[in-house]
Length: 208
Image (cartoon, rainbow, N blue to C red):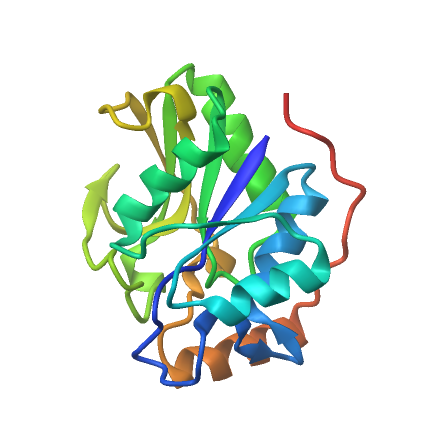
């Protein structure tokens, strides 16, 4: 199963260069997301744009597949990138600023999608857990009586990418998904969390 990791934004709020390459505990931000999806048995593909040429170079240096989008916007670039994959089955879509995501979380989302029988699945976290909103996703909804924010991880059906999809909304009380990086304070908090909660990798199993 492909995992499309969106890494084409400017990251202007941080003003620290290309956001996917910002170091957290000595490791580029995007590499945490790549590692988690690989550990879960997925094939990561990085969606870049003209705004992130160094991220493209990083992908080349590490043998990670990437595609170049127009850099128009998160949704527009995502639709374009999924079209480039030519994948007509389910595809993971993930933001690149989730350094605490794990293969177990990815498996939970995949299992929920499979069990739902729906075209798509979106992951949400309680708004009370989220301290800053990801660029392009500054909204909230109510699920099961709880105000929630998008976690930045979804599964969409590739063949239906330009159409509305029947979606299962998965609410996860998962602090690792609530840690997205938009400010220097977010960076500092993520570094502390990662140092205190190191991830032990499992072998991972491919999703069917």
